Image: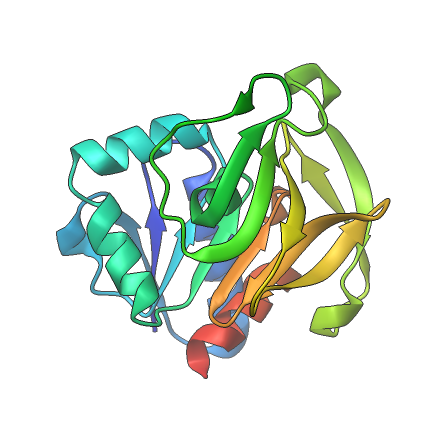
Length: 198
């Protein structure tokens, strides 16, 4: 199994380490950085947190955005965390400036509000119930976190925090508004790799 992590900025190294920890449990696998379309020969893709506008602009400039969208539309499993969730959603607004124009992959029937909880200083940790993916209650980090304000079509909420969606899935697309790679647990990555193995 080969997992690609979009590696422009953000916590891509932490995602790679989390995936490697899961591979240590379930068997062999490889994690590679994805920066260009030629790097998309993988079984699953992770789009990490960071600054979604920057990730989108760099992906567009380096010719990754459209091939990535095509690959996801063809069914490759993808995990988008924080900025990755923003990139994958069809609708994006910003809590402060409203409608936001930015390059998106836009494949998931979800609406996301950027910076929902505030800016950097309003970052926090919270316990999220992962019952929908057969997990327990775990603590996760929310850094300038977005919120998933609604899902429709085939998309469904998998976890909420104070009645706000923080994790959702549509077919092979999984998104979280928190940072599972910074939590010290691999439950989200384990769930994602099970999606990849199907």
